[in-house]
Amino acid sequence: MKPFATIAAQIPRSGIREVMDLAWEAEKEGTVIHLEVGQPDFDTPDHIVEATCRYAREGHTRYVPNAGMPALREAAARYFEHKTGVATSPNHILITPGAVMSVATAFLALLEVGDEVLLPDPGWPNYTMAVALTHGKPVYYSLLPDNEYLPDLEDLQRLVTPKTKILLLCSPSNPTGQVYSADTMRELMAFAREHDLWVLADEIYGEIVFDRPHVSALPFDADGRSLIVSGMSKSYAMTGFRVGFTRASPAYIEVGAKLQEPFVSCGSGFSQLASVEALDGPQECVSRMCAEYHRRRDAALEVLREYGMYQYTPGGAFYLLIDISASGMDSRDFTYELIRQKRVAVAPGSTFGRVTNNHVRISIASSETNIRDGVRRICELVQERGAART
Image (tube, rainbow, N blue to C red; front, side):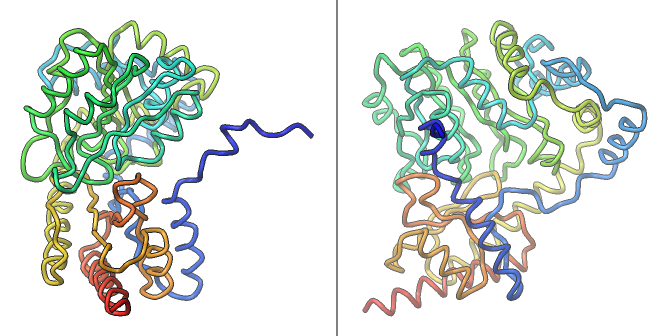
C-alpha cells in the first residue's frame, strides 16, 4: 500500500494533547489536578445557552453561507469597530469553525511552497503544524524571559528574507500571557510594512487582560495587510460552539470564504446566531470571568513567590510559564513525572518551542484551590529533584 503523505506523517502530535491523554488515564488511579488545558472552566453564560436552544428549535440547523451568517458578520464588524475605532463592515469579516480555522485559512490563502512565516518561540504548536501542512516554512523568533517574553525587533530583522511572507503575532500570548503595548504593536506593524509582510494577529484572548487594555494590531494597519483573528471560545466560554472570525480586507475575505468549502463548507447556524446574542448582549459575564482569572493569576504568583520561583507577571490570557530548570529535568520528563508523583497535569514547555524547554505552562482556567495546590506541588517537585542532584 502506498505511504501516507510525508508531512502528515512527520508532524508531531501536540504535547498538550499527549498530556491530556496521560492525565485522563491517570484519573483511573485517583484525582488529577488539571492545569494543562486552555479551556475556560466556567459554564457558557445562560443567556447564550438559551439562545442556542431557541435557534436550534427554530430550525437553524442547515448549511449557512461559506463566509458566515450575515447577522454574525454584522455583529463581528460592530465588535471590531467598537474595540479598535477602525471602520469595519461585514465585508471585512470571515466566520470560521473556530479561530484555529481562521489561522489555517490564512496560511492556505497566502502561502506558496517554501514561503516563510515568522512564528513566536514559544508559541502555540498548532501554528507550526498548520504552516507545515500548507507547505510553508516556519522560522522562529525568540520571546526570551530576559526581555519579558516580548519580540525583539533586531532579532526579527535578522530573520527576515525575501521568502518571508507572514509575521504571526499573538497578544495576549499563549503560552506566556504577555500583552503587547501600543508602542510594541506600532513597531511590529512598521516592521511588517518595511518588509511587505502580511500580519496574522491572533487576538483570541483580547478580552482577557488584567493590568492594561489590550491593543490590537488593527489601528496600526495603514494598508490592509493585517488579518485579525478572534472568536467566541475564550472570552465567552464557548469552546464547543466552534465560532471564530477574521477581520481583514474584503479581497482576503473573498478568498478565505471560498477556501471554507473544500475543508469545512461552513459553520453551524445556531452557534453563529447564539454568538450574535453573546456579542450584542450583556457583557458582565465576560467581566466577571476576567476578574476571576486575574484573582487566580495573583494566587499562582503568590505561591511561586513563597518558593522563590517567581519569574514574571503575565498581563492577560489564562497562562503562566514556570521555570523548572532547577530540577535538572527537561520539560517533557518533568511533566510526566509530575503526573505520576504529584497528580498534577501541566503542558511541557517543549511543545511551545526551544526557548521554554526548561519551563512548564499552567492554565489558570481552574479553581483557585486547584491552582494553589497544583503550583505548590510543581514547586515541591522542582525542589525535590534539585536536591537529589546535589
